Picture 1 (cartoon, rainbow, N blue to C red):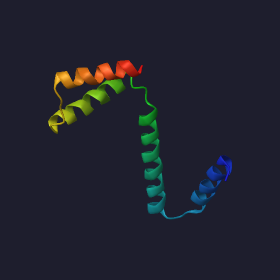
Picture 2: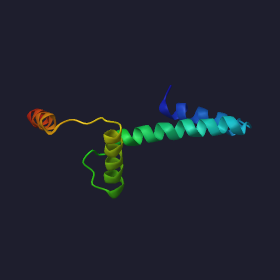
Picture 3: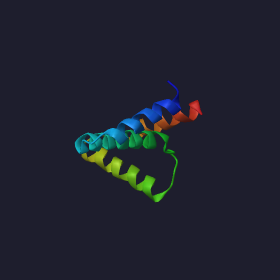
Picture 4: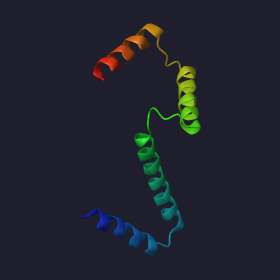
Amino acid sequence: METQTARKTPHQLIDQTKDAELLTLCVRLLEREARKTSSQERDFFSTSAVDLTSRAEASMESVSAGRTRNIQDFKKEVDQWKQVL
C-alpha cells in the first residue's frame, strides 16, 4: 500500500466515525506516536531551553530513582565514544 493511500484510508474512516470515545482514542494514539517520533528525531546536542530543561528533568528523575554512576565510569564511557567518532 502506498503512503498516500495509507493516509487517505484512515482519514475517510475517521470522517465516517460517530463514536466520540473511539475518535479520542485515535487522537491519543496518534499523539503518542508523534511524541515518540519527535523525541527520537530531537538533536541530542540541541541547546534550546526546552531540550536543556527536558534533559535536566530526566537526569533529576534518574538520580532520584538511584540510577547513578561514578565519575570514573562516566569518563571511560566518554573515552569510548571519542574512539568511535
